[in-house]
Length: 127
Picture (cartoon, rainbow, N blue to C red):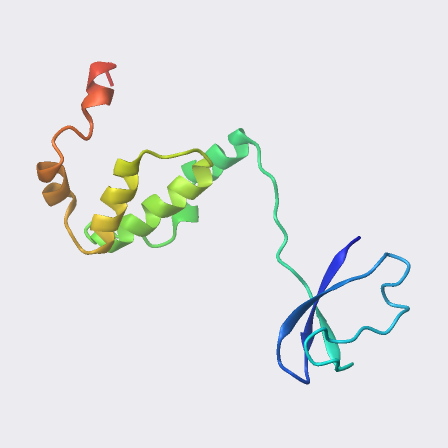
């Protein structure tokens, strides 16, 4: 059965109401919290499934990254978090540690100095 989100104007809560397609728009709904009938339908966010190629195309567009300041560790951290989310893959724990440290204001050079083995795997592969 489909769910619909409403905002109750009486108790000011967001509520979810289960209705069949036939009931929606034809049957009055009431707030499950307070019983009020002054509800306003809320529209949920829409999720769009993207292919891996589409995600990679989005990542390759520099305009999609906003105002990245390569001299600002926090700006770099925001970009890296977004990149990690867009990739849709599990990232190693080191990725989160690096981003957390950038968010705290640590410079990339300081992080690299304290984590010398961070890029060792890539070097072994000839990258």
